Amino acid sequence: MAGDRSRHWRWRLALTGNALVIGYGNPLRGDDGVGQAAAGAFANEGAIAHTRAIVCHQLMPELAECIAAADRVVFVDATVNVDPGTVAIREIYGAAALASGLAHTATPAALVALAHELYGRSPEAFLVTVGVSSLALGVGLSDAAAAALPVAIAAIGRLLSERPAAIESLGK
Image (cartoon, rainbow, N blue to C red; front, side):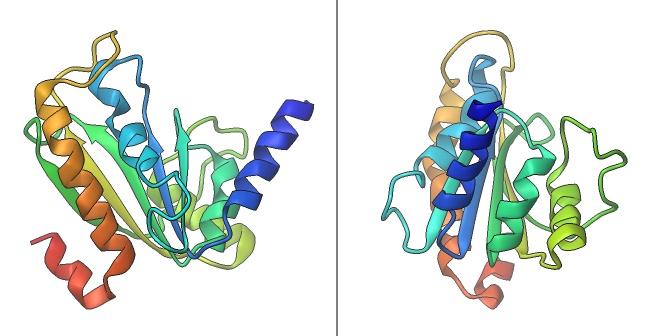
């Protein structure tokens, strides 16, 4: 119990800026760890001013508080829905909130909606996905995912530092 509470406070205290990067996935399943690896680049203080990062295995409702405290949030994840090595960006709009308060996982859109529902704030939000080739058990990224990682990190950096009009051109 005390460990859970300290983890919660660590997230709250770490979020002192106005931008948040949330990278999620399972690094023990090959390329599924690319979201965590990308967010890890922003975990160090000073990577980009006023930006904090959370690296986690899955999205959970507890993240809504951190999301509500930010002005802009970038979620980062692996996907099999685009060609391996492809980086895709899309804007996230709030969706229906979680069906149950007891849910163990959530989507980026549901978390943005939950942040609005619970805290009255929903930031600009984006999802950066990296096309992957392997989600098999194993540690390490495939060549395609490893090559796409710096591209994803650069895209996240632009999303965090550009004005909204410039962001629209990133997805084109």
